[in-house]
Image (cartoon, rainbow over the protein chains, first blue to last red):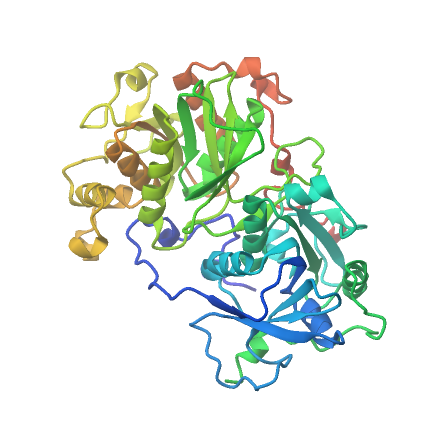
Length: 245
Length: 282
């Protein structure tokens, strides 16, 4: 049984240090930077944050590495020269049509750095529409959630809801009111909302579930997923990558 | 702090009062702000993007049937009918950046020309030395209209000035220097826990940072505070929202909500403490 004294409180509750005006500020960090070649005007930017979506991106055929986003505090040691599903990287690929970019987030972006990474990405990659694939966190979901149940919800910016268009994520309900998404996915969607960009965040549960939903959405977005079959039973989470540096 | 207005929206000169929550035990200020936004049928004016606030997104927190209207971590609402602007904060401030947040918020509020800022927050009941039978219903306040924090309008409403406020006390003076632009490295702060006093504690809370920074901008600021314990703090939020209405001369009975007393309960409150227990266990 968890120790009630040391157990992490629910997300709406604070530690004393969270409410302390005089807590030590985090050390300043250099800004993230993105190297992108070429830098075209894009119709679609897809950001894969959830492990299953990253695996799907990795298995997509005919994609070309066009750039990478670097967080100075993330060491590159141990990364292979060629893109790999196991590397600590944030690579961008062109795939499908020339006007589509896939981003695979293969390192952990802390909540405190999420806004800076989102700002770097959205301001560097000019896209008409952004689709983000992320996971639901149990502590942020206010409904009943079972580990063996697959869930999929979406959130959309106002521009996406109003304009719709052919690249709309259909067949998925909106996240129930009261539940929230945080972290990098939330930061990217926030940036899209602030800038009036069409944006969708698709959140799935559990971390290695929702394969059929993801495959359906990738297909709707114009990617060839016909050769990718079966569930990914071994999903590389970021915590596994930390063992190998 | 960046601001993005909803299409066709802007801050109204007919809304001289601005209300915002300060993070605190029980999230009471945030709950009260939600309740007021819902009850006065405030419309969203725009979104705020602040580097010191953690990002979060969600579905519409207020509509009876949510249609996917996106909510962000910092939003501004207005009700011209009630002359009220409200800023809601839905996620925490990055640890150690509360002063930066308070400065940026004060700069923003000063830039949009508001006359009176009300900060809603709560205090930890566990810190109280003296408790009487009615103490949990007592509203405390802090006001910028006088140097000692007192305000006759608040006294006339039966509220008590927060007696832990001492502008000559070291941490309150330190806050004042930070609000004036001093760097934390320029000042020495006593960190010896044995010398840590009650006044030190109240000066370290988020409402104090906001109060001091807004006051430094020359704005009229009133903090409304109530003591509470961690738990189901909905009733505390009603108390704080009711006190806000008394100060602003608003009558909740005229809100015509779905709850007794005229209040309109936000939709997001239905699941605020998670789902009900699984009865199949029994």
